[in-house]
Picture 1 (cartoon, rainbow, N blue to C red):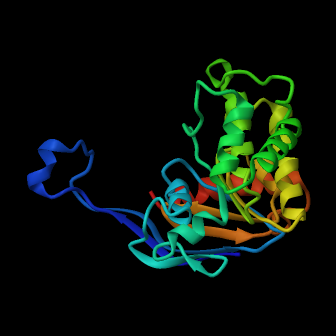
Picture 2: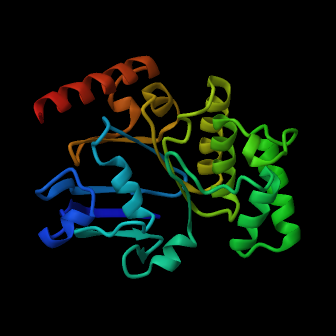
Amino acid sequence: MLEVADVSKIYRPPPGWLRPLVRTAVSQPVTALAGVSLGVERGEVVGLVGPNGAGKTTLIKLISTLLHPTTGRVLVDGWDATRQSTQVRQRLGLVLEGDQGLYDRLTGRQNLELYGRLANLSRAASRKRAGELLELLGLAGRDKLIFGYSAGMKARLSICRAMMGDPPLIILDEPTRSLDPVASRDAMRMFRGLADEGRAVLFSNHRLDEVVNVSTRIVAIIAGRVAFSGAPADLGPSQGAAAQALSDLLEREARARQ
């Protein structure tokens, strides 16, 4: 479903004549990703982990067509994310960290129905799908203007929004960051359920216990490179042992690459 093949991304500073007009913290090229390869098949939940600045968000933006790779390629259901971005976007649901894609002056249900229509659902189908998702993530009884939503409620609604078009690939960047433990647990169960229904799910997360608990495979990125790719069982015989081994791996690899 998703194939990332030998992808690199280099951020280059603006040319000298433009620098007085553009805020930038660097004067030399920055390599965010270097030769990253991974895949996600239907029925899989792949957890993406790594320290801040490792390149996880850059990778997610490359997959979702928001950025183009410097080298390598990204394929979604056989479509090239650089050359066929429209077809790729039609096949994925996306939640970015700090997502601002909700309209404050609409209710939660109205937001979802709007995005359903944008995903070419009929008015009736949008209304039905919105109701199902609001119920699934515990928002059905709290339908009010987004302006009054808490950060956790907005996070849950963003997940609902990504699922409105029933895409075969779901990509989430820190989806449980603002959720309380119960809502986070429910979200993780939902991701597993989406995969069991035949979708492919890729999510990044700093909560290693959640990653180990729900993921079919785990991909750890350190300094723009894949440091580990494998099943949780490859890390330890139990969830606790696997989470601790993953934590130790990230710390060890990060120190080695400093």
